[in-house]
Length: 190
Image (tube, rainbow, N blue to C red; front, side, top):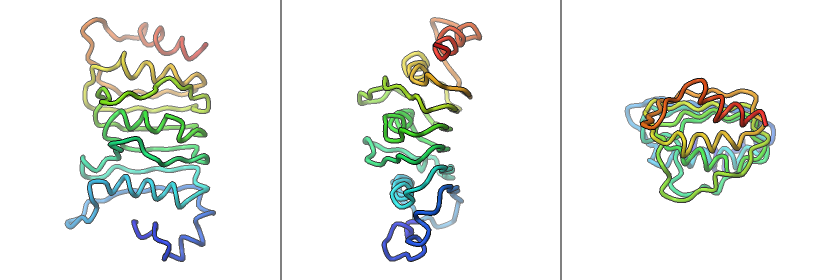
């Protein structure tokens, strides 16, 4: 896959402005040459090379540490990407994807390994008026529902479809249908 990013590949020059949909899957192999940052490099390469890309499914890597993660805010962006399905390591990576780099995004589906408080401050207030469908899955429990999840959902004022699969730990209250209606649904209907 990394050879796609080199200027020596004639096939890329032929198709780079024609490919609008791309589905990337990773398979386990006995000898992997992918580095720890390999997924990030491939993701950046795809968005750089395929300038007309509207749909991207960036599949899970068979290795946990090879989920997509950015360490620092990425410099990649796309003004054409409408739909993105991606497996991320941390919640902050989701915030990076929704900080304006992908301003035309209408559908985002993320599978996150851990929802933890970011170590750096992220502006998590910019509205996401184009986002119509959002799916967030995380198998590990989180204590950050009120701090991270609810503010993110409040930014999605025109959301039409919401899919949450979360394990939430909350000492102070019970998260039930009323809580979801009060904190999320009512806010989306404003």
